[in-house]
Length: 203
Image (cartoon, rainbow, N blue to C red; front, side, top):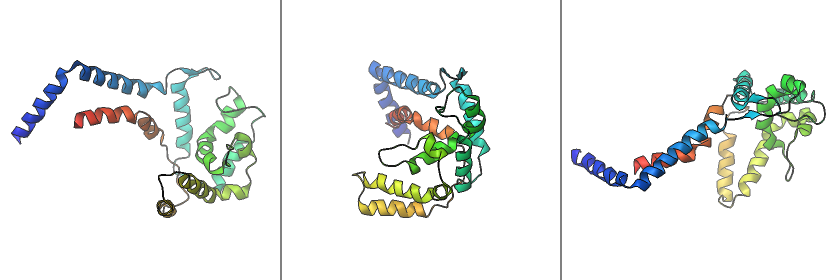
């Protein structure tokens, strides 16, 4: 075992002699640090609040739904909140009605939009405002339909693969229970640079 670590140390000495390696590692480290803070740098020109403060506000709203089922009742609740918006008001706009009523439900909107989006068309605020009770209660049915279409359009998957994935999805308990996942999403946003450093260390 001692010989093994001696060999490892010898190999790393050869690696670190090269200036290009040190420069590449330093650049990767800088890129990682920058990517951590990039998401919260600057400010929202409409609300005049920093992106960091905006993140904390959205985090607080998301935590308010923690433990609640993502079902038709909650989706209709979000729809009614967005119905309070005047025409032409969009997310991140400096509007007191949006901030008070609709913004707390933005996390719901972003979770369900892909399930209700029609081919070639997005699911915009107007669609959410006009969402029927029937469609709200069919969220998981619509979600799995869209999921299947997405998989079938991927040439990497065979029909057998698609059927197996859908089968596995059907085994997951529904309705989903809401939890805050922002921390994981931010981690994955800079996972490429993390992977580069990890692979370098493993080498």
